Image 1 (cartoon, one colour):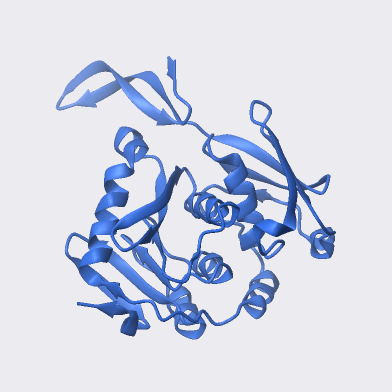
Image 2 (image 1 turned 45 degrees about the horizontal axis):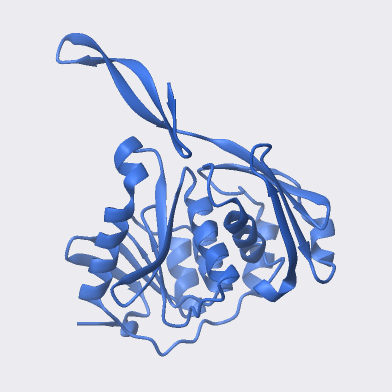
Length: 263
């Protein structure tokens, strides 16, 4: 067994065309990361073993517990133990009532309607004069695919990235599509990147929670290789976000605020 930071080479038996044979397979690693906010245990995130700081910061931002990197006083991480501490400059009162729960890697938080309504009420309209060429979006998605080395090796992760023009500013892969997005947004916050002319790129389904994450960081365009949900489309329309799905090859489907997409 050969260990990598994000996947493991493992010996398996494969049945293929009437024969059994011994082969090696790449299997993604999955680890728990327990996040402490101001010394209070907040949540355990099940994730790929990379980008812990970015994941923690992105999670706090997309939960509405912090709004900028200036809120953060200190970050410390014990990667081997899967422990992450984030200290803020001021108390975070809403964290006291935060529902401590296990965060699933594939389906987000499974939050009750009350949590969703509270999230939606906190959001502001995303206003941006940025325009994005359709051909440029296709090239960004191609760049995301090219950099998704772990997916090609294992088939077991989602990819997310932040793009502008034809360049990717950052990308992450993770077993959870929510985690991949949070890592990208955490990096964006920590490096104080301007999001007004950027797009969030995804390989997985666009759900309402993904839209909420993008809205919290005022990202005007969300693009995915996969489909959106109807609630995500409705939220995108209301929040001023351009939502694009099925971005594959030279085609894409525009669901909201198509005025930002140009030929």
